[in-house]
Length: 112
Image (cartoon, rainbow, N blue to C red; front, side):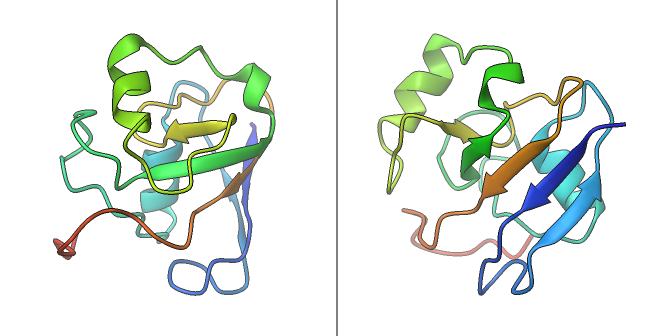
């Protein structure tokens, strides 16, 4: 079973975290299942950028992003070449190292 290593983030996981992920599960679902409350203002429908993450290792194991995700990522704060929306990034069979950016463009936290 692949693991997702979340790098330390002051708000979401100050010490960092290592979680088990199920192949076919999104990075966001694995995070939420393990108590890492990544914002997701559009209810995982690829309609915002609040769940933006940067995949530091294992990026190539993810299915390529589609045009809709790419269009949304263009609006994300701190966009990098290995950026993905965690609601769209599906875990395959390899471990991932993921960084949750410090900021989002979300004006109001929905309190998920």
